[in-house]
Image (cartoon, rainbow, N blue to C red):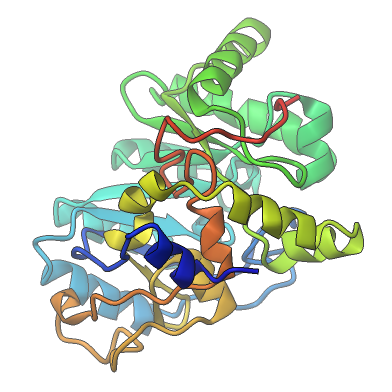
Length: 325
């Protein structure tokens, strides 16, 4: 199978970091869910959590980085980390746009009763996982009862202004070994179904391709689909999507302060090129090497319409996909 680096060269493309404007912070692997597709392999029994010392260092780096516009907080369920609110408050005080990647059901966990209001008061953008508008599909991927709780959480967020005055983006990812459908068409279907069935409003739908790593890879291997899915990603390579991949402007930080090009490289422990490997190795984010480490999984970000933490990258890509439900 052709390498990603060779494919880039064949199409006359290159991949380097233009500058760090987005800092994605993984606060740990503890989560109240254990989703089948989770590339973090997060779950209730995971103990890896960012310590206060690491959070302090990140706040220092944020304060010294005027070019840094967005703090993208993820997990696991990042809200379960005791440093979550302190990081959010510090980033907002510095004038940074803050994103919380929320699984929705965490809002009903013990100790999280006022988390939704906290997020609204700090004008935090929410990117919420909802892999389908169908209870059957969501519960199959994320666990029994998750759909019902997710709908209840979305209604709570709507009451606080999310989906109208505050940004509430939903995330779709396929439940099988295929690429997401066209993002705009699927967003229309989501909006119609959620409004009609539940009177729920949201800002945008983001379609994200499942990466053939971690739990999703294990499922593919179990079903004998791993090779076929990887070949689908390779065959669907879209050179236009390369220009918008998230690693061009993002830096990923793990729960223990290590630096990576993206969240997927972090889970694969694919080291950042250059000498700087942790947040304690640099005085400024401007020191980060512009080179980007790549591997076979990178075909996932450049297949079809392309995929990033912000959804589809390019509208010309032809997706070999199935419908959401």
